[in-house]
Length: 438
Image (cartoon, rainbow, N blue to C red; front, side, top):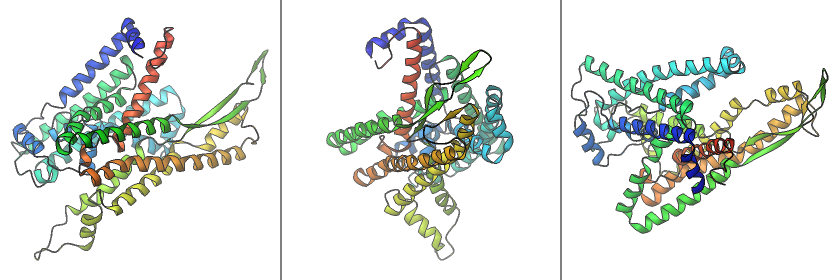
């Protein structure tokens, strides 16, 4: 491994790509600490230092922004608008035939979909920045009751518009930097920026556990973390390979086909999307409940009491069970949208491919649906259990936010890390070098 790293720096092309990627990442991290206009930086730091409690969607977005959300920086929204826009664009393929047609057109259609994703990212940036600034005008809603300081210097509308423009421009700049890394750097730029945001919080999380719980608890957390990482790597690399045989066919004087290949179906085909969906959906009742004020006698609606008792605290068994079931359900839903067995079967039939022992056409579709439903079950259970790791840590450590090895963070860290190593390996092998981990 170390010799392969030396070879990377000896190759001028790979060295330039790596240094370019690191430079973009450094700029991205620097922007996370530059406060947006009209933000009282000292008061914001006081509220952060007071160990203010955030939960639900704020915690999720803050993780994706590398802590920039609670800093109210110019990069406060992070990469989240782009992630949301990408998911929406992908889901719209099911309901808008034009989007599905563009997806099938190849490179030109993908370029058009990418352009739509960019436009939607900017629109979501405006919406989310407006929401964040509105929440920041009430510090208790963002940081909890421990924060009573005014976070904004001025609340006049011209200043608010300037803040919205600054945060939206920051979102556009992050999107541009991610595309630069994809074109001129190493790996998928957007994924690497998310990786950087999450990894940046690991040292502070581990130090927080050590200072509050001691070295023994820190050692136990690291041991659990290594086990969870090994489990995630094993499952993320696991796949069911369905053999496919292509019949020989004559085109002119040439013979095509006759080779054997396979359809790789991963155990976790949905990635981290179901966890994000479930987290966002569980936060909505708590968000709506915030706008229901007590009456003159101090009484609140029964459903508000139910939400505050069962859907606010992540350590409640009902919350954990509902969170787990939502992840399982969203996994099946997302896999059904992204993998179309009928389309795969039609493509195989068009090019003379068949699964040994299975007739082409409808029987192939039914077989693929059978395999997909069976392999999605352990994948969905795996996602649910990994997502519950921070909540279980809250029960035993009373510090779920300081527990880095679990949930969305570890799935992204391991997934992006594996993909980046594969891309580096491919580029090393093109230059007759050994792979990074060989």
